[in-house]
Picture 1: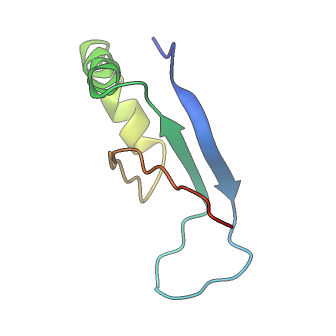
Picture 2: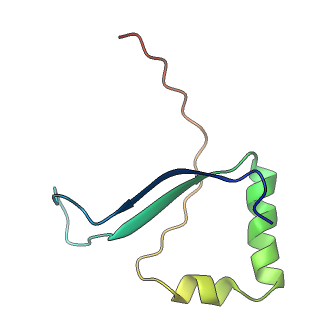
Length: 75
């Protein structure tokens, strides 16, 4: 089900809080090869009735989909 998905970044616990009143203790950024692959994974979770398990296993869960940002280094 997750073939082609890669972990881009993962972290736990902030070293220092900069601003705000909500602290995220863990986060994961995943890279999907296409919008279609992302949607198929979400659809499969719905079909298997695991959406609630995923959403209720954590607090402050934020799902956001972004387009890739290619940074061209000039330094």
